[in-house]
Length: 230
Image 1 (cartoon, helix red, strand yellow):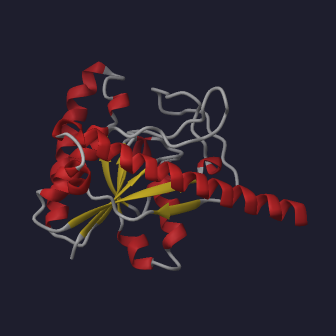
Image 2 (cartoon, helix red, strand yellow):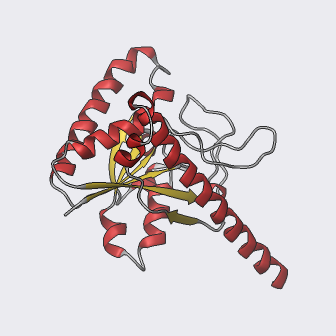
Image 3 (cartoon, one colour):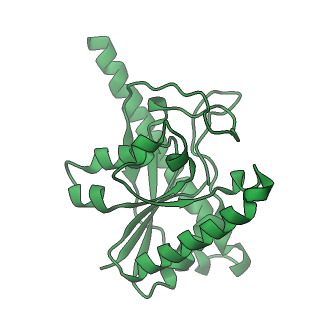
């Protein structure tokens, strides 16, 4: 009956189907019923639309793309308001598992080291989700989730405004990891009220980053072992 929100990094538009495929054998109910908060590209980009079929999606427009076309900004804001209202309604019913990418976009590699890492979280997005849970009237829990799958369909190195960006698709290992929940009241009790939102978001990000590094070592180590024994 409780709600669960998974605060995650985001690597490709195929993330929802990759997560579902990773869970379908051990947790088929979760894989089928998880709700994904997704950007508009998952339903507008012809390459990405097939990955969205069969998933439970609530679409929002990222802040990064809100003013790409200034005359569409108001429409995007209204669409985001409708999605938030729908999310509030769903959470009031309880028993929901919601995945949300807290950075508002996909991870990108460091321009100097070429290493991939989770993009920093938007503390306002994290706080909005937390408030939706608190006001739902149903107990809710927030867990940090790390996802590593960028090599399957890596995004461009820079944020692109236009649909139709160049993509390369390949076969690669993928993994996800969920750490213990992080309690906002516990975080808030240990710092100033004005800082609580940012400190909480940073705590979730730090947990995701730690898990991500473990996933990276495990996946790359396994694939290196397979290559050496092939």
